[in-house]
Length: 36
Image (cartoon, rainbow, N blue to C red; front, top):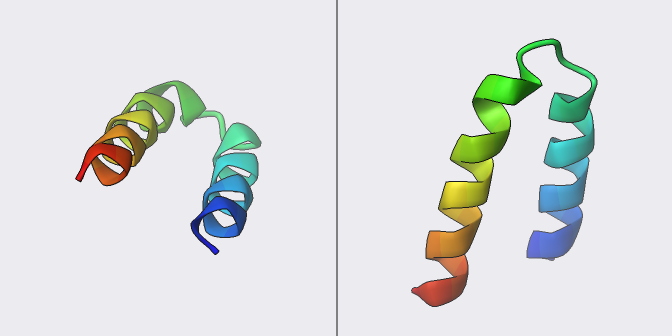
């Protein structure tokens, strides 16, 4: 379930010109999710 949400969000942000700002934040939160 989380994978589907993440992929949708990541694809949406990938189309945004601010993706360079948001991608590191998402990767950070995903890592903390996996390790929690």
